[in-house]
Amino acid sequence: MNFPLKAAVKCGQCPIRHRAVCAHCDDDELTLLEHMKSYKTFAAGETILWRGDELAFVGSVVQGVASLSKTLEDGRTQMVGLLLPSDFIGRPGRQQIEFDVTATTEVTLCCFERKPFEQLIQNTPHVAQRLMELALDELDAARDWMLLLGRKTAREKIATFVQMLVRRTQVRHIDGKLHPLSMPMTREQIADYLGLTLETVSRQFNGLKKEGVIAFSDRRQFEVLDLAGLHAATGDDAEFIS
Amino acid sequence: MNFPLKAAVKCGQCPIRHRAVCAHCDDDELTLLEHMKSYKTFAAGETILWRGDELAFVGSVVQGVASLSKTLEDGRTQMVGLLLPSDFIGRPGRQQIEFDVTATTEVTLCCFERKPFEQLIQNTPHVAQRLMELALDELDAARDWMLLLGRKTAREKIATFVQMLVRRTQVRHIDGKLHPLSMPMTREQIADYLGLTLETVSRQFNGLKKEGVIAFSDRRQFEVLDLAGLHAATGDDAEFIS
DNA sequence: CGGAGTCTTGAAATATGTCAACTCCCGTGG
DNA sequence: CCACGGGAGTTGACATATTTCAAGACTCCG
Image (cartoon, rainbow over the protein chains, first blue to last red):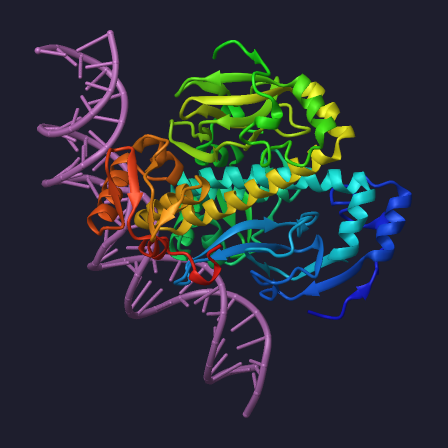
């Protein structure tokens, strides 16, 4: 982790201004936050927080991807959350977290010290409310993931994962074909996210490739050729696709 | 569902008074709630809410067990939450839910109409705060369940499930042996909760029985003979057992 | 007593994991 | 510039946990 830089970017120009914890803030509130915030950057693979750590700071992901993961006695691990830009780390009233937070790619966080931030929440309903919304969104995502982990086949898991990437990284589509996307994680990380092994992940990607649903340029760059085919491969009930 | 009975029980004597959404309320606030609430009872197996339903009411589980579940196109289903007494159904700002809510046993709910309840939240920070705490608790539970679904073996899943029952139903222990507990669900429901088939659930219960970890009196009544053995069988990291 | 739902148990099928070899890619250092 | 090395990814053969299919046992209730 490099040294915390004091507020390099004005909140007004921040790329996550309208989606992060500050989304509902007015200008006055934004000024308050601006004085409290500092940026921290973590290299890919670096651990941001360890399970059980005293939570010194909380904050939003500005750039890059971070992940939450849990580990069993014998080392098996499961990702329990993927944090993309605008997602928040740390919760009011929790001094510690029961999972590791790791930088999956290089990550930039907009951090606040926990104590002052919690005081701010008391008098800033806009922030408290947004925090609630973010928590509920995470809960929804967690429940979708439970369905995936408990009941989907390897193929469905991979298709769902790709579909999520498409949704969460805003991309333009040109006649049903999507602009190139990049996998923000290694096969092993994907495996830990989907409850599979990295070999199975590799095989299923190649399965979808052979069927012409996706195409790889690079091992990390791909595009979706058949969006309908992708949806069909997720196993989800079509009636409820959002 | 029987007819809603108007506030049969005084909040002061309510069994979930100190844990439900009203936990932090003072007497005045409680009086407010008391005028809004009504009880509804659902028989075992009855559906309380369908996925996609307009959410007319929200409320707390007073008695019994309800479950949240999601279903795939072809009918595979996964429980994504188990609601025990004091747990809350419905979230501020959400008009609908994206899972089915079903009564697992006979369930009594303490209900509020959604619209008035949401207004009440605005002026009652005690309720809003408690709602946040409950949501965060659910998020924690969901993440533990993701680890279970993605990475645990059938045996570990069953052991974890039993452990959860022990924790969530307060029971006295007598020299490491626990008073009889009852399974609140069928083998099939347990299977849907754990991402297994009912046959596997049955086999694993019998496995733990043969090893003397648990003992069944009835098919639904059992006791834990070896609490340490149970913990060991969950696969969880001992250092972090709470 | 009969029947339906629930649960158990067994044998066979299969999806995914495990183990191992090999390729590809990229950066480093001589 | 090339050789080297290591991490990441692929592919194959085999092992196995869990599912699937099927039959039968138990239990409650009309």
